[in-house]
Length: 87
Image 1: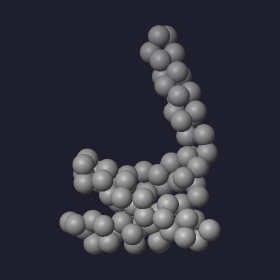
Image 2 (image 1 turned 120 degrees about the horizontal axis):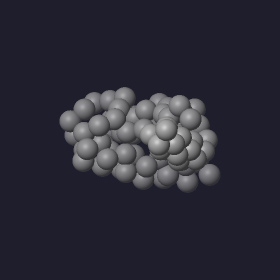
Image 3 (image 1 turned 90 degrees about the horizontal axis):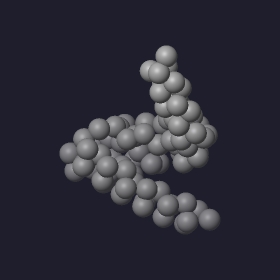
Image 4 (image 1 turned 30 degrees about the vertical axis):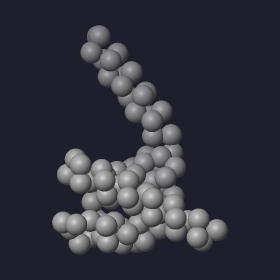
């Protein structure tokens, strides 16, 4: 199980680092992944620091405030905003 977790984090760090290098913005981990990763904040950030060519830390990885059902909350907020624009 530990090997599977380590492999998952390695692939995730590649994806997150690619997003950082492409868009030069902070990366927010949300939903179930973000909720789970926040408990293990140091290892993912250490892996990011090792992969990043231009920075020596992984502090650009942030965790979403909404831990679960983030997309549902966002979809609801978009509908509420559309409603207020119609009034």
